[in-house]
Amino acid sequence: MKSGSNYKVSSGNVFADLGVEAPEEAFAKAELTAKISEIIEAKGLTQAAAAKILNIDQPKVSALLRGKLTGFSTERLIKFLNALGRDVEIVVKDRQKRGPGHLQVVMA
Image (cartoon, rainbow, N blue to C red):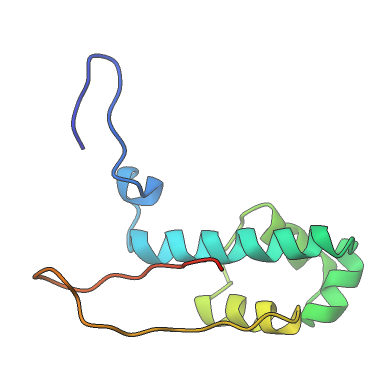
């Protein structure tokens, strides 16, 4: 990050900026969760109704919607999207730059 007089320019990933371990995965989980929340809201579902669809209890839906993602793996979030009637595609491609690859969630 570059330093300004009173601010730091973001890297584009708040989790990397905060020094979170595995920031790309944390960002991907946050993006998947945002989509889950958007779908639940668009469908007008209560947390109890969403819990039935996702096959979890209502307090877990509440935690999920508040961004408490401990206990929610990327795989589990993908299953939730499927249960909500969404297809999820995973694309593996050659990296254009040198170094390790990265994880990215692209919303259609």
